[in-house]
Image (tube, rainbow over all chains, first blue to last red):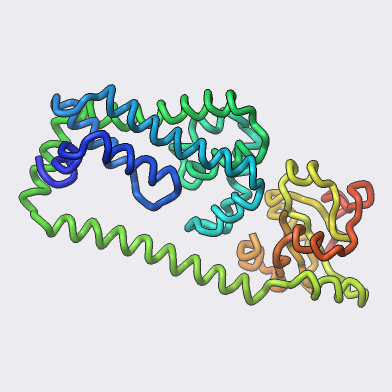
Length: 268
Length: 45
């Protein structure tokens, strides 16, 4: 076995810890292949499954506690910042808040399996004021479920993964270059789409001053308060004349929005 | 959401820069929830 598996064998728990910790902090390092590799090594008797599990869970939990504390102290600003740097900024805040509102602490159990929610769920728990003990319990259970699933898969398919690694070795650097190229192309494509999205939004945005002037001038506008119900209940005030509806309602009712007026959308 | 509505034919969509926080920071007027329009009273086109 060579490449990533050999590297993992050489550096063991430290590498696994650093990698999972970095991924959970939000860096674009996929931890799942490493967990699978660690599981495969454990299956081949070359790494301890228990140590790998404890290492991965500890790393995930440490990163999550940091995010949770940031969420508690800094509130919504943390979430907005996280969503701004994510590759899916359009739906980030709304989607994560929606998942949390529906499932509460239980969403921590599955958060690590859902792209986009993994890093955002812990600060969200802090923002919503989840009790520390409850957060630790559910987050630790979620981290355990996540790490055990992929380590277990690697363990169960240890033989197959080894033969894949052997084949990869025979293909030499070509496979690595292809995989790295595909990953770079994917990230590049997402980045370009995000830049285009942000540019369109920047062009269309209205400043508070401009909106105030339009309202003062008596211009007929449609103003939609898109805040999540949780945010709305926490601060039940709107810009004068605004209609409060969530994103799903807005999509359902969009045919009722007048086409001849400007439609102003706002969140928190 | 803004782009989605644009694709659905609403051309003049404008997100508020800075959201409600920016509006509040400037001390601009706000309506209480009692006065606020709800979705049931959404405007007709």
